[in-house]
Image (cartoon, rainbow, N blue to C red; front, side, top):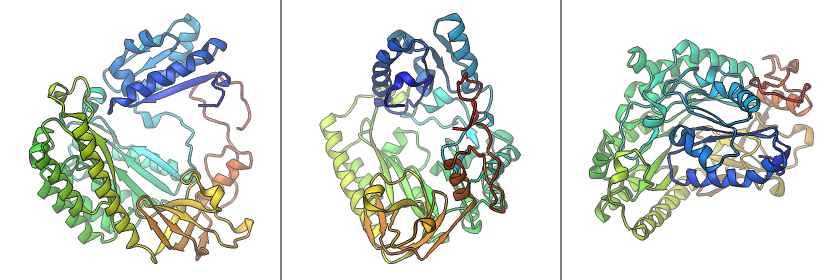
Length: 463
């Protein structure tokens, strides 16, 4: 959002409903926009995504200055809804119960030149008692492999060298068209796309994670040695109450097989503290599994009841108990992350330079990016001349010199800087073009106009 929101033509909130604080953030942001809307009635405000699917008419009732509310299944309707709201001078609310147009087929202008996200499915067939996603997103719907690969190819043609495949449960991909090993085949097919250097995916579900996927990861050179594997709890009793159809022994067995096939794999996870009924013994089981798993990082949450989920009606734990346990979990994972990162100091790594990963880079003279295992690395550039400095999308080979729980540092001069198509595309955009990409020979691509999604705009030239 601009510092002066009244200069915006359209402000769109794409919301999440997984945690309770998303509600507070949305209505807080909408409240901050009200004065700007009063000063500039022509500005339009739209709210979409899971919160919109859940709250529907409530949003307009609480924030009547909102122009459009659209759900998780009709993102493509936004331009028409904005125009209808303008024409009718009243809020438009449209919530579909099933997917109309797959979101990835819509035109878009990607923020990153070097990295793209491609959805392979929407929805979820699991019934976890804490999760509201199936209620809001519906049953899993998979895209055909040819459609996914065509989009991946288009992203690569536009200059990207890294693609992340997205789905609520990627390793159940294929259930819609009856192909059990479809996800492993998709990973291998991505390995045959020329110019695609890095493939990632998120998120798998431990219950459906199979050895053919591990083999595909290990045997496909451009599939990166990183894996996000949500644990949620290390207690088998709590996992049963969550309706998570695996137990801690199975989870640890998956990690063992992944590391046997991919020794350098960095594994991250999700963890929930304070699920209703969690005892100190249950929580200790979580600590034990976290200690054994050696996660490179963990996304940790205090349990947040979501209306409409089975767990929402269960008696909550004392917040003070949950907070204290949460602190102990954070302390443990910080120690494990720091130990795992320190073990990498002195190692040579290949880093894909990003544009926004490091907030302190300007002050420190570093650039930042992601190693192949997805760890964040801050890079010193030594005495590199300006013309030789890596651009976002370029690849730097360097040696790690320092470790912290959440990042690594390489303060020595880079060993190599490889300029890439992605860096060329970034430079073309920076220099005044809005190119979709750069040809594989590295020559400049012709600038093209911005994608507008049909929204009214005053801009007719490149941004």
